Image (tube, rainbow, N blue to C red; front, side):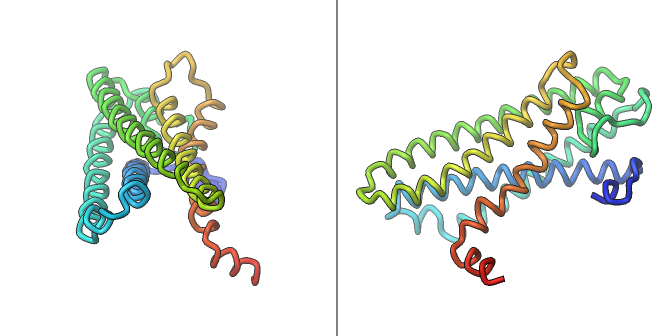
Length: 224
């Protein structure tokens, strides 16, 4: 944001490493928390009588702590491995932020490159596992919602779940394609579009999905 506002196109080596660390940290933590939120909705709709036991304050604290701790270790591992590679292909990134695939293009270490690619593949598999869990949970949720006799109740449940599922799908599909696409498919415009879709769109849509769906907040905006 600073570079965009001030029209600069440079960033220091340490700032690039910090940017990559926090980017991976917050994105992975967000996806973990989205998975936990999906489980919370599944328990609330499909097992309401067990909600107090399965989603008590202690359980929520443990799941949130696990999400943040795993995101920290994950981002630390990626950052340390990425910036341990010797860069011999110049220092110009074809991206608007420090992104792992574009940093790897500057590396001349084949072993380190394949090690990082292996980490990315493992990460994608874990993320896909979370996505399968989310889809399975939503299948169970929709089956329970369809049994609600009230049309208004069904509409409210669907309108709450579908935007969340759409953002998760957008984030995971574009991030996966961006990191695993072949070099022959790479182009500056495509890389930029994919990066915007998975790094800018999900956070930008969060207020629309959560905050603006709150009736009190909508009433406050109308008054303003």
